[in-house]
Every structure is written in C-alpha cells, then in structure tokens.
Amino acid sequence: MQVVVDNEVVGTQLLEKGKLQKRVTIIPLNKIQRGTIPADRLNKAKSLAPGRVELALSLIGYDKDVQAALEFVFGNTVICADKDAAKAATFEAKLRSVTVEGDVYEPSGTLTGGSAPSSKYVSFFPRPNIICKFYNVQFQLHASPTPGAPHSARGVEQA
Image 1 (tube, one colour):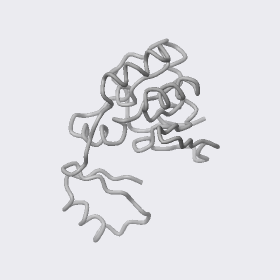
Image 2 (image 1 turned 30 degrees about the vertical axis):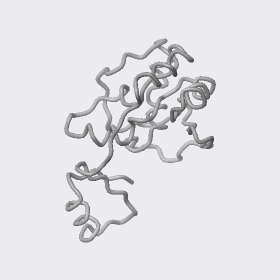
Image 3 (image 1 turned 180 degrees about the vertical axis):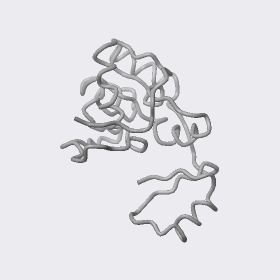
Image 4 (image 1 turned 30 degrees about the horizontal axis):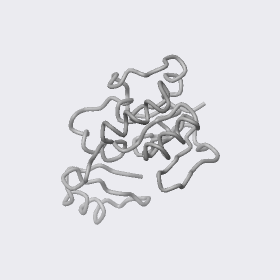
C-alpha cells in the first residue's frame, strides 16, 4: 500500500506511531521526484499506434493538491488498448506501458502479467493496471480518449 503525506516528518511519525497493520510505502509530497513523459516520446508512441495509446495521467481526474503524487505514480506510464500498441510504445518509443488487460511492459524488457486480483473492490491509486480495466470501455467507445476529461480517481469495482 502507498500512502501520500505532506512531508517526510509526517511520514516518519506515521511509521513510528501509526500502529500500521500492513507494510506501507510513504510518498512525501515535498520530497518525491515527479515527472511526465517528454512530448516527443509520447507523440512517437501515439503515432505508432494511433488511437490506442494515452498518457495514464490524462485519464484520471484529481485535485491539484495531489498532482505531485499522481505525476510520481502515473506520469511515466502510458495506457495501451492492446499488446501490439504496448509493444510499440515500450520497445520503439521507450515508454512504460500497461495494456487494458493489466499487462505491464517495461523498456528494460521485463513483462508483468497473469491473473487479475481476486478481491471484489480494489483501489487503483498506486496501480496503473487497474486504471486500464476502468478505462477499457473508453478505448472501446472512442478511437482516441479525450485527455484531461474529468474522471473519478477513488476506486473501481471489478466484475
């Protein structure tokens, strides 16, 4: 689980006095290195698979006070409609890609996939593959999703 906090002091207090029931990763907003994909690489990926590649960050709505955390988590990832689009975005444009099925393609050559989570409700804040499942319908309805459209980033119920 990942927990966003204002600063490292709050993070330290949470770890020391929070009586946490499970292992967590603290994301202090004042210390994280956030970033987004350079426009030329994103445009290359989109041209390699027209209408099938979108920046993950553009598919979610969020409050400006958590922008740094969302850029840290999703800023370097594209969502792809299928494995062919993911392969092109990853191995030709050198971008981290996640398919709508939840398979993760890394420019280093690693691939992650397999069975879906077994729980009925999941939080997708730290996991781009869950966003993919949420926005699969958008790829099916539109050749090119509208970047920046207001969407909820709270959670999703899986069938």
